[in-house]
Image (cartoon, rainbow, N blue to C red; front, side):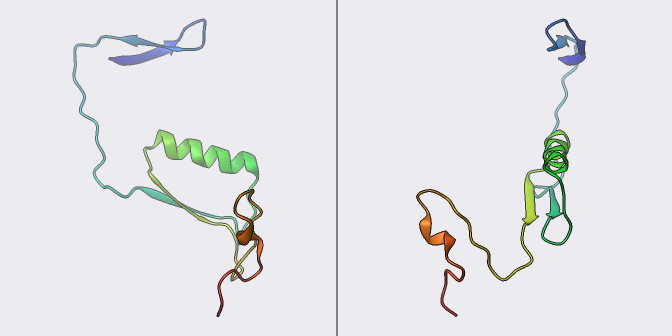
Length: 89
């Protein structure tokens, strides 16, 4: 099966090419580092990076969100994550 140009509904057409393609990665860990802790990236850029990861079959995202020792995260149901230092030193 081969992808061809888009049709009227903006869905790709599939053509039977008569070939079988076995596509698998050479390495189990295929990843990217996004460092928004030291360099600002817009939401649009982050989404584009995630889409590029999908299209290039990457499976690991290491996201450096903060350059601080800890940061609070306000999530409903996980109130203890809001504390400045959640673990004793």
